[in-house]
Image (cartoon, rainbow, N blue to C red; front, side, top):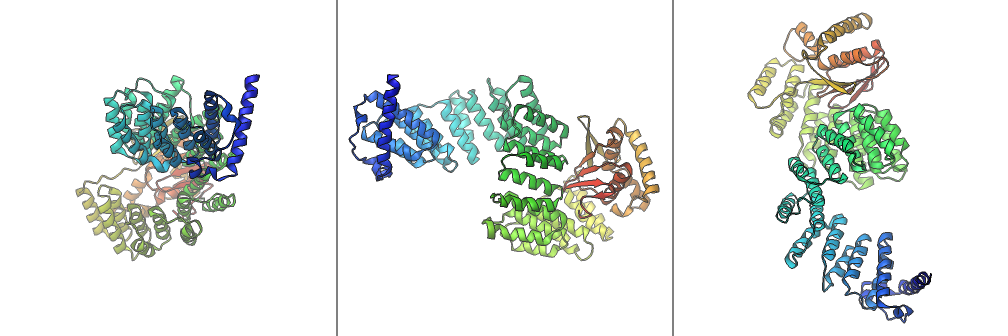
Length: 629
């Protein structure tokens, strides 16, 4: 009890000193250098007691990020002549670092006559914690190596983390070599930091190599590896790693769960995504905003926008990432009105849109041909929110104009913008020239020429130009274009569709022959086509095939398109009332679009088709795209 009373008296006396400092200029840098002499009963305490309690009070300032009070105690330290104590100086550096005052932390560091390993590590850590100071962490490490031979695995792992933030691959590989030379490469902190940097910068093979060699792996090591695989679009491998963590009984964290949900989104693996969602709910991570945003993205990409919106509305707190996720989801499903309403609600809650928000809302306008709305958003970016349009915003605007039939205006925007036109811009113009038959052949040829330069290996550009000629009945040019494609090294991507049934993905190509139930599928499809012809007057439209062939041959090719086969298999395999969800690697053709509308009416099924551009929701004979796609 006596010790407790003594400590309370000590704090009371320090509060007395602190109040005097707060009402004086002693908190300025000059005051710290020359503190005012104050007759103070604290000085009567033994030096060891004073040092101990000062350390505790500085740690409290660090925890509470109280830089003003921390400076008051710093002034008292100088007054008492304790600034030369290495341990106290280290605590001061840490305190200033936690309070975000890196310059004061560096001032304390530079004034130390003797520095310990902790001093160097703490100062390097200070630079790493403050994102604008990452380069200084590398410079300080170089200075450390020149002045002392001391270092630890924490030093190396910390500096590697600085490389991660700056994408400094050259420096990272040098640190990798240093870790090998000093035998710290097997340390779990060093290894984890290195594989994290490699994964974030596209060097996933190097990341996997380090992972395999690590004798010890923590939860963070596994989550860093899963995140790296997802960032490099190796989604199946990421899921396999996650399943290993489950088998090993490792603890799940927000980073691994968010990453593996993103992997499910990339694979459109709805069943797998739902299972991981159940794990998230079970362990209590449902309220985490970053996990919630990943779940919203996953459900949106898997075609269940209603569930995505439900997760959004259930979130207690909503940051800009969460708002962007749901606006992007509605945009992907061409729910432009809903996206625009959310865009306004977002601002009403006090959250300002960022660059990503504007990309999503402009994309939503493009999917519905809302040219004037798109123009308004494009112009208000800089006027209202001080956001300079980047190349992605210009690309969205070009797409809006092109889809809306204003290809010449889109070309004019490309000519006047401060960026070199990207492949997506020229692709928007070329695709629109095909759908808008008439006087756009020259512009289509210009767009195609630019695309051949930018993407020489993309056969899809040759096909688009060929289809533009075909739509205008210029069969000689079609033949020349297709001959040019054969002579080039570009490879045409074959159209395919896939559907998930009972946790297994079934893939179909046009004219599929290898599926185990293909005979049944063709028989059921023929019955369905006959029923459609009788009930709805549907007939395969030869005009949707742009080959120079007889109409009967065109109809035969269209009859067995991959999405029709995938739908028929889903109809045979899924219970009544369950929506049929189909994914496709190319744009859905006009005939298949008509087929899906009629099929949804006759079979009384909701059909969701995701192609390269967007989602199409077919129900009761109608499509959510309202024929604008």
